[in-house]
Image (cartoon, rainbow, N blue to C red):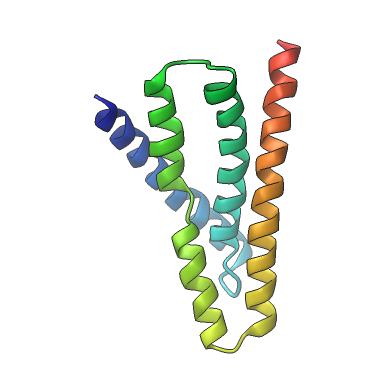
Length: 127
């Protein structure tokens, strides 16, 4: 049964990733991978919140963890694409863009996870 929850979440995550990344690329253009960066930052924020609510506070069931954290966020976040894009920029000797992208992705996603965890705790205590 867990496989079905993961598959359902994965389908939703993949479609959501495509929608968000395409929307950002349409808005910001493609000279810099803003779409992938946006997906990774948003995914990191959401996984921070999901971790607090689903793991630490044990809201929901194991099915919810599989649906959201493994399925949806596994398909939604794009760190493998991040790696490929980073290597591509390095191979093109676009040093400034590559290091700006790597730094903002790594530090930004870690900060977004912390903010997501903090936000989930604040919302939990307010309700």
